[in-house]
Amino acid sequence: MSEMILTAITVLGALLTLGGIAFGARRLFNEHQELSRKLDEIEQVNADQALSSEEREERRHAIIMPTSTWGDIEYFREWVRRFILEQAVGNLKWPAALTALGVLLSTVASAWGVWV
Image (cartoon, rainbow, N blue to C red):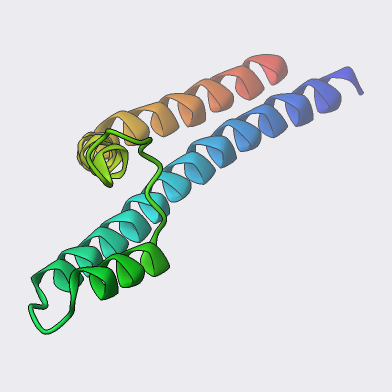
């Protein structure tokens, strides 16, 4: 009976860890895509010479409100966040895959060790 409980806890721990990795990676990818899309739209609005500066500002703020404070460059923090997310997304694949593989192998070894 204790073998079954220990095996179930081991497998549950692995599933929770893998779920956390998948959830975090998905959230990172989604945030990167959303922010990139919005900043690209803002660039298109800025490039539209048919709009007055007030209309451009209104449209930019309708897409995303800048989080920069007075005196900062508008959308500075959003651009920095975008570059950070691009780097994180680009470097996530192999570390996440190796972590998932490590969790799976250690779970198999732990569960097998209980029964042997």
